[in-house]
Image 1 (cartoon, one colour):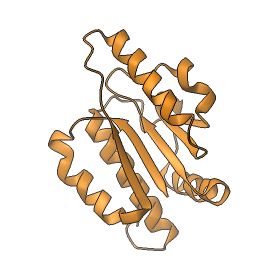
Image 2: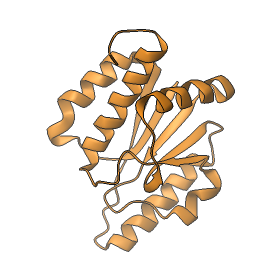
Image 3: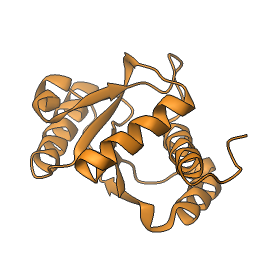
Length: 150
């Protein structure tokens, strides 16, 4: 199983495609919404959310991948291979997406197995979630030899 953890209250303009990929993936993926901080200052938001995330991560034995802008990038085939390899070793993978101001990596680094980046560009939060779900779906199709990737 794949789990996606993110601080989000709504998907706004991306709700339809996000729900479509969640439907297509079915029981292969579980989306966990954590409540965003109500603090006003960005440093307070990052601190509060990072502490909350650390509590969640320390309880799981899954392979944990943080989406982090200054990290390794990979093409779709490498991403599909990563998922397949890690599922053989760990059975479950969790992808973590921070909120608008990111996460305090120093608070969670002991619980992170890998960092990846979708792109060096910045995207709206919900769009990053949609892109991750699409790539997970694409990886699932590659694994099952379903003609979606090409």
